Image (cartoon, rainbow, N blue to C red; front, side, top):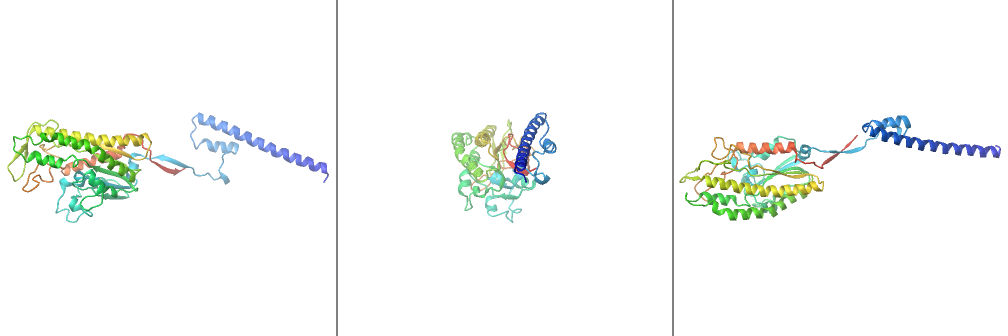
Length: 371
């Protein structure tokens, strides 16, 4: 080959390569501009990419196969709650004390169920039946306090230890025993009818309620640290008496009859309101902190104060047991002031409604999907 011809050929090839690169860069630039214009015109993602590929051969997947892009999808509140295991924790309002029947519960639900008086009629199992959870754990225990929740009760492990990272929903009622309500009720009704056994306890009850904040926070923060993606739903206590009681309510039992005066009914309602307000303050405060940092999961408070409206003690169809005295110590029957079957169904409905509705704010739980 003639040397000059070789040089011309190389020069031509080099020019051709540079020309091809220039055209390619121009196509990319034009494609980018067109993409921006299409996007600005409202053409949805997934539509203009094939147009660019077809027109400019830019952005085409290798070998003509469209690749799958991982995309995070925000989960609904219901999806978050039911995506893993459910654990029901707390005190006698969760365990089912008010409907516990030793005959029906001859075969205990699980370890320690008899001592904790865990009932198959608790709202916990009604909620469990309504969804398809990966697993259901029921460890609420009558008499539980925030302290025993964290340290253990009656030789059983702490309820906190029942929470694992696979849990997507936690429900609990807790705080009534910290406020000393069992002692309060005993003092209220083991008294002569002209005494002021109830209202005289107000300073001590309010002191206990105020002191609840720190340990309740420890409980909720501990649950969240073990199940950081879960929805934690705290259920408040319903008031046991009508909003505006008009008559005394009889105290039943095989002992000389007493009655709960209108004044005592109003006082017990007020103390229930104060307790619920403190529980709600702690739970809602923790949830605001989670939301502020766009954290996953939630801590939600259901204000149960008016949950039994029209079905309080003394009404035709009460959702809560009245006061029942019996021989022995303590003289107040354990079912007193605990929900009836209708009451537990009502609490289950409140929890299910909250699961469906969500926490009332954006959640930041996501699932990675491919498109």
